[in-house]
Image (cartoon, rainbow, N blue to C red; front, side, top):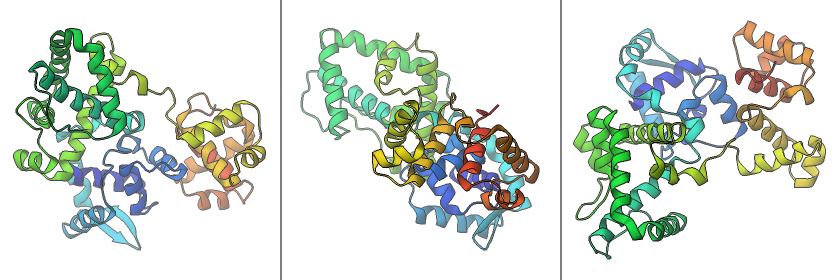
Length: 349
């Protein structure tokens, strides 16, 4: 699964970005360039899908793909070979890539999953009056949340656990059996400890990379059902309702958005926040990508936005320098970036 995802990303970026762009997307780097890349090349679904991926691990996989003649590397630019194109097309549908929703769930997936794993472990021990166990999660905010949840449900804990079981069973029943098993084997309970990624990889005869992506996929699958069909899953919904955001922005971009909504110009916001204007511009790009109601008209005239989007479409490229030079340097890099961000999210009309 991992090598297929890399092949797909290489295909999408068309040699216009380096390997760093893929690494930043998969690890969920929160920068305006990464946000723009994932939208421009239609790889937003993979954002943050493999947070623990190290750069050297990615490079090792890329070298293996090149040795297998699935990709070509020229001056740090990556392209699929014909063999790579055929291999990707033949194998892509064998894995649950369609379940990945990184752009929608990257900010909440780990909190939801950690809460669920720790609560299941805690409740299963408490129901059996076993108060001594090693928690699967050590983060203080997760521990406190589960402690509060346990106190709320303690008077009728058995019934609550039964309802949680039924909701999870309903979701897992619609998955391929091996993916449902993956979820169950990851969970800890009374007299059993959840398997590590290495143990899961050995059991399912795949790489740790694949296990990491599969776990992300099944978590996103759960969130997709829980958040968009909340009625059948009241217990599971309670595990993520407080972390759901209408517009998932970084904290700094959110503050910039608040000042924009007050009518402050970019120069003034930079002064107020004691940040470089280029940083504030990065925030605006992020907002343009994430906020469906954002309009570029306050920053780019309509005719300019039309020129930029038309030229990018005509040249079939997202390279800023090429677009800027093709438009005789009439527009700034910020204006071009902003229009591309809005155009790619279909927020410009």
